[in-house]
Length: 55
Image (tube, rainbow, N blue to C red):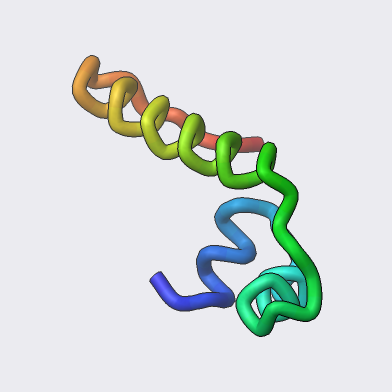
């Protein structure tokens, strides 16, 4: 997944991701926790055979 795809997938503006990566802005700690939670929940649902689609 490239930067644009990740941005779209997570609903985070691409410019914000670029600023976090360059160090111009600091990513809030809660954002990393939410991304981790989202990823773990996706894997959990996949193991259970449940598909999740955002609307």
